[in-house]
Image (cartoon, rainbow, N blue to C red):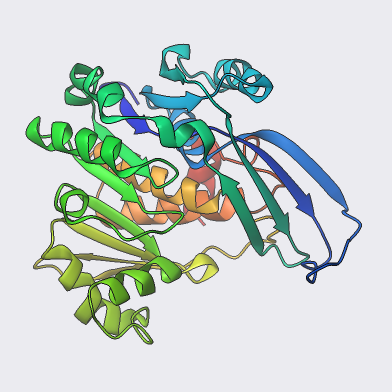
Length: 313
């Protein structure tokens, strides 16, 4: 994919993940089958995925001044990402711990560290790059101020924006109003429903989402709202058009970490390339499914060729 870059307003995290038979109970110690330590973070994952799709990538990734920051430069080099994305700040580099059970389900905890020290001023310094992008994408391992600033600059320049509000917190009205594409999972959808004062118990039931919560979110800014349901697939809602559904691809799941990042980025990149929504959704579902078939994230994020092969099934 030639042309304008994807600008990732992201996060960098040193990720430690353990494969276990089941999740530990409080106070319990378990033997792990494997332990993986690798560079990660939702922002880095999005940047890697965009690059593997053939897109040029730019953006901001914050790291601290500790030993963990040394993971970042070789990770970017290995992924074919520019070192200029790194913002070096005082404090600790982001870190995370995750568990994956025998069925591929995950739970994790992330300490954002330097990612939360990324400011609106850092974003303002990259205003020209944002205005020249094909898409600006963000997630919630960074604070609201840089996202609001980046999305405002993007929309002023006619650049579409994509938000994946994970880990979930309430989305500010200003950010939602400046979001072009909103991608949420079922947990995030229920959180949004509660924030908007709507009944959330059945908010993620597909027909009800397409009829109620999806259109409510469209009224607040986004042009497209996508609900992901893991292996069950995804549902996309846009104004004045029928909802589009995409079934999940059946695979042997070993680790679902990173699948959401693969899905969101692939959808955004494909739409930025001008692909039809149904095709973009299918490629996104394929990318998410493929990511679950390998341990970890860095090496599990699939290539464009692998996604194309899966999509043709």
